[in-house]
Length: 497
Image 1 (cartoon, rainbow, N blue to C red):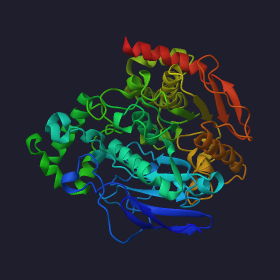
Image 2 (cartoon, rainbow, N blue to C red):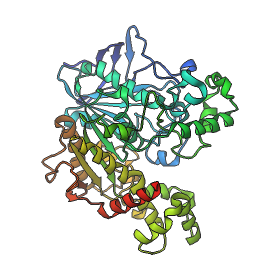
Image 3 (tube, rainbow, N blue to C red):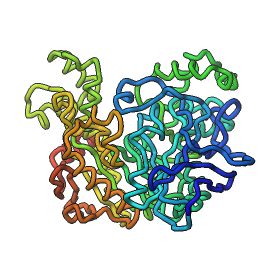
Image 4 (tube, one colour):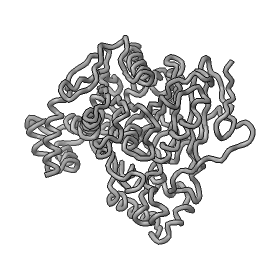
C-alpha cells in the first residue's frame, strides 16, 4: 500500500490521497527569498524535523491584480514573498520510475502561480501514469529586476532570480522525485506563454543543462530576453520611482512588498523578464541553441491560431476605436513597417483590429516558435510542431483560438471552475482534450506525441514543415502559416536593415 508520507532529502512530507491519485502541495524547494535574500539567487533549503503538512497550496508569488489573469482563473487571495514552493501529483510514492512532467506557469513574467485549478495534475497521473510537478517562482520586480550594472557583484544575477528559481525547482526534482514514484532521468518541462518563454531561456541557460530531457513550449519560444542595457534602464526607472539611491540598494530589502509591486506597474508590460546578464545567462538563448546547447533535448512546440485576440479584447484602446485610432495603434506598434504591412498583408484594405491581431500573433508567438524549431532541427534534434485551431464560442466567438485557450485541453481540466467562462460548455470540447492530453502523455513517456486518436504526426523538417492542427477533426498540414511566415521574414529583415 502506498503511503501519503514521503521522505524527501530535507524531511518528511504528509500528502493526501484523492481517488487513485496522491498529492503533496506546498513543498518548499528553496529558502524563503526574503530580507537579505531579496534580489538574490535562491539558496538551498534547511532540513526540518518531524512530518511537514503538505496537503494545502502555498501562498502565490506577490503580483499585481490583472483582469485578464482573473479571467484565466488566477487566484491571488493568498500572496506572500515566501513563495518558493511546488506541488506533486503521482499515482504512488513507490519505486516505479514514471515519466515526470514539470509545469512552468505563464502570466507575462508578472502574474500566475502553480496552484491554479487549471493546472491540476491529477488527470496526467491517473490517465497517463505520470508524475506532475507545478511550481511557483518569483515574478515581476522580485524576479527580474536587473541590478547587476548598478549594484555590482552582489546583485550580478538579480535580473534572473525567477529563472534561477525554476532551476532550483528542477534541481529539487532531480534530488527528490524518485521518492514520489518519478524517474529523474525522464523529465519533461512544459509551460505556456511566459512559462514557455522561460523554457526557451532554460534551453540556453548554463545551470539548467542536464536537468530536463524533453520540453513542451506552448505559445512561447526563446526570443523573450532583455539586453543588460535595456534591463538596467528599466531598473533605474524603478529605483527612481521607489526613491532608492543606486548607492544604497540595501534599502530595497526593507521596502514593503506592496510598494515594490505598485512600482512595477509603472513600466510597460513585459519590461520585467529574463536578462542577458553575462553571468547566469551569458548570451541570447537563440544563439546558445544555434550552437547546440539543447541538441539533446527533444521538443514539442506550438501556438494558437488567434493568440492575440484576447489581449486586444481586454485593451481599452481598442474599444470603439475609429479609423484614426486604429492607424495610431498600428503606428505605435509597427512604426515604419505600417505601409509594408498594409500593402502586403492587408491587400491595401483599411487597417483593422483583425489584421493587428494577426500580426501580433505572428510577431510575438508564431515567428519565434518557428525560429526555435528551425534552430533545433538544424542541430538534428527531434521536433514536433502543432497549432491549436479549436475556437471558443464565448464573447460571440470574437476570441476564436486565442492565447491560453489550449491549457485546460492539455491538462484535461475542462470541468474545473471558471473554465466554461473561457471555453463554453459544449460536450464536443472533450474530444479535443482527449487528443491533446494523450499526446502530451505520450511525448513525456516515449519522446513522441503520436497517439491512436490522431492522424500520423511526422517530425518537423524544413521542407514539409508538418504541423498538427488540433481541432474537432485534427489533421496534419504542411507549412500552414507559409504566407505570413514569408512576409514576416521579409519584415524582420527590413527592421534589421
